[in-house]
Length: 450
Image 1 (cartoon, rainbow, N blue to C red):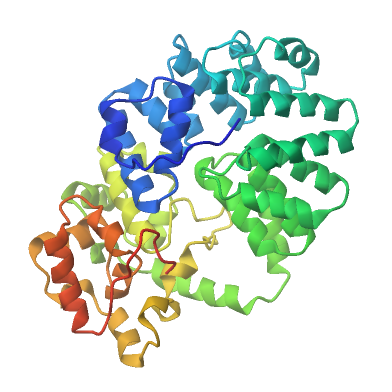
Image 2: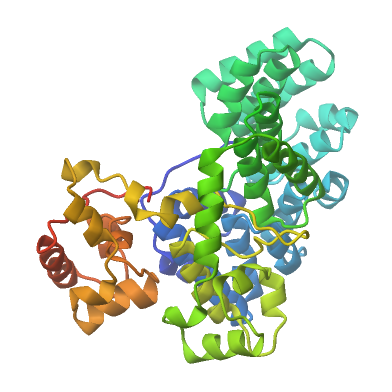
């Protein structure tokens, strides 16, 4: 229930060498690996490796941390405390609250307070408030979670004002408490205070992975304001994790149809650019022989062919495993694309990320000051034109699947140094080559939007 603890550790090897043994430990790991794009990418690749190696216990924990709840539910050992928590909380996220309540029925007194709070949340989501009230007194909860469930029962009794005061008091002491902020957003929406509701929901979507309920409700509010592109972004974020989510699929279709009713010059430009990019041959990218052969055997010749397939469809093909999947996902990410973009009517979804990587002409280079036309042209040069050493070239092109010089500037010095086999020598070499083009790598940790 309580979103906690930003840990400085973001090394997947540490997670798999000494995996968390409690739900609270998993939550701490989530705050380490899901708040930085490079750390997230490295972590998800390590989870895929664990799954390929048949280590289901580790893979289930890793899948839960990264928000892959369907996979976590499939792999969790429900005979063990931690596995039961993973399965139960995954069922909640997948909107199967009754099954979650049945699975976690005896866990309200679990020594791990986060586990206990999740068992009460299952009763809350299944609307079994009688059992919730009965078990609350003996449940092993943090003070914040006890205050939350107490306010929640007040809300159920119909006293919304008193409940809202309880949530506000809780958030003053613990601003990261997800459930309290969600209920406060819901009450604000119920009273017609859309601005307050949107403020709360937009705060919640900064959590990684973002809770589905918050994305759905925020999407509806965006639709009410005719901000259909933002609404599609919310529903699309859900579908990227759970392509079969029925509400997200329905809402996305409706919002996209409404979007089509308005002339949007920017969206038209994005769609034109998307169709150009989707014509790019797969042969233009540096892929392993196995991945290239698999795609060829599947008659996948262009990026458009590739994004027309979903992740499960690729994995069903003979000899196409998690390693090849991770490899092509990196290629797509570098282009601002992802799998499953083709709609049933044959058109393509324009992902939120696409505009940031579809055109380097719009790249913000604030740390460099005023950018000349010559520098903008240099952004479009292929990385091969830099004549880098083999080690440096492999790190950028093979590991990150970057193609153009401008793609490099998405990453800061610290981001690059965090990559395996990319040290200060490689960084100095790269910056030396960029100096010749009057380009500078940004300092700091967070990736720039491209």
